Image 1 (tube, rainbow, N blue to C red):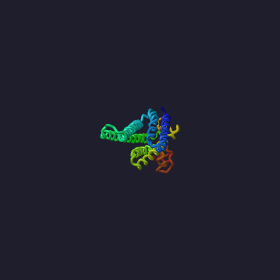
Image 2 (cartoon, one colour; image 1 turned 90 degrees about the vertical axis):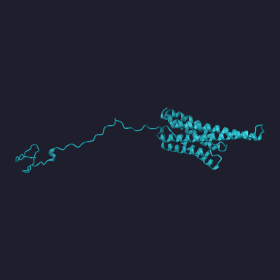
Image 3 (tube, helix red, strand yellow; image 1 turned 60 degrees about the vertical axis):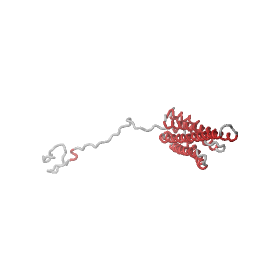
Length: 253
């Protein structure tokens, strides 16, 4: 894949991130904030994977790997926690022959395990956004400066937003985390503004083919130019062709 291909893949990634931002806002009313965005970003990972075939960048690989682990861990944790809550509700609604301590203990174990899985997924997601930030910092020459700067800021906000949004039991941090995530998605979505004209340009390297630079050296001055051209005895002007004065015969030094 050429540099043009890399730009195209990141542009598609940016488009999916923008949709994730919009659906995150819409999904707030449905009470499923975060999961819609998780799924959209997960789908967008295929474009990062295709771009990395050319770039072979460790940070991009780690971004995909950690985000995938975080995605799976959060989904699994949510399912486990819901199962624990459902088991507890069913126990109190429908009498069973099981001892109360067994049902309650099982529900508590499932709920705690689910929470652990969810927060493990949050940590993995935070590390994933940090890896993507490292990529943009170290390979900023691939994209225009304004896009790189927005992407780096977006990764920071998504990292912070993932942490705050996980504190759903605290209203204020959860709201702030939601705002950070939406803003971070929109900042990262500036990648969809990439055009084929934004392909990285080869660096200018000096070669030996450049014409050599010559420095003129001062030419030595003729001895006759520095000596007196007059006879020291009679003062007659010397032609400079001999050692004796043509008028009086005195030696000219």
